[in-house]
Length: 135
Image (tube, rainbow, N blue to C red; front, side, top):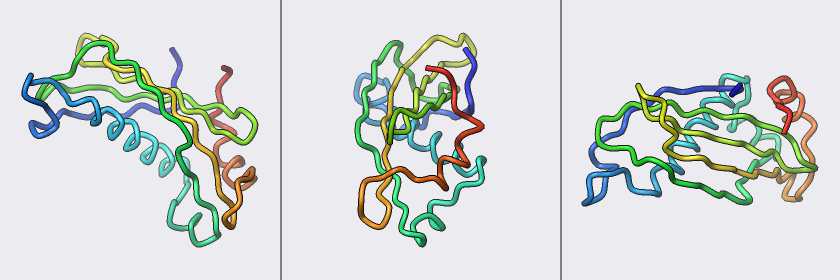
């Protein structure tokens, strides 16, 4: 599968629950960190957008958990992005390394508030356009 961005990370001990597996909420943190690193690489600064009155926000997240990650596991967090109306849809997959077993698959819908109103953001679209994938 072709991804717009990939980020290698490692599970930290405190992210695991009593069963010794990564607590479900941490997968959302992994996905958010991946989106933020992707945006930085794409030349997008959240601080600069905020100064211009542009605030991207998460509207919806769904995550399917497949194979658990455990303490000190390394994993690859990947994303694809496409636009659907005013929504930017991130399709995100997390693979355990080195066997590349799918650990989690998520879909994150984001929207922009421009000067406090829900709307399209042409500036953001111009940065993201080269990364858009076919659905």
